Length: 274
Image (cartoon, rainbow, N blue to C red; front, side, top):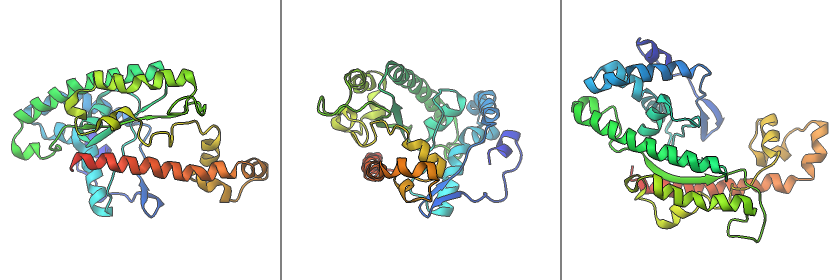
């Protein structure tokens, strides 16, 4: 879908159908050659300031595709799963969505990552403000009205150790996890996060719902192409039956955790007034 924009040719006459995971959840897969599109964003970036139509189309195409699919299929929310980098493609995607989430391992590298994205957002915001000032009203309509805003952070793959602290984390992980909110307040500017309450800034999305490691459960879910909680009800291979049967309650219990997480995401999205 991005190839016509990459090549500077006419867009596809119609959008290909999404992959329906469930009646209410569709997937639009990426492609392994997206780095070619990222190169085009980088090479055409300076032309945006002159209002070049192809440059504007290149930078905004990911968002416009999402909007087109949302209109056709009635999507309420579109989620972009970006790579953990701050290159040209992610600059275009992150800057032009409505809100973003920072997933964090409870370690030193996530703290560095928050610093990096905070500093990058400050630079990107200034660049887009300059672009908006230079563009005509018609060309400005290709961009969202507001710059992206922060929705919160998650902690994942953390070691559970019950009863020692409010997040039931092992001490080594807890020491880093508690530094995340402070780092966010220091490096992500207030204007990008001011819509969130103090509690929302201080706690991970969903609190402890999806914080702790699932161990090998995701691998089984990937093997059977199912959500974790549906794996015990699948037609299992002989070698997996005994293992999964003994952990059935653990598998099925993840459903409530992800529901709790999703409700918090929706609550935070409601603060954006979009």
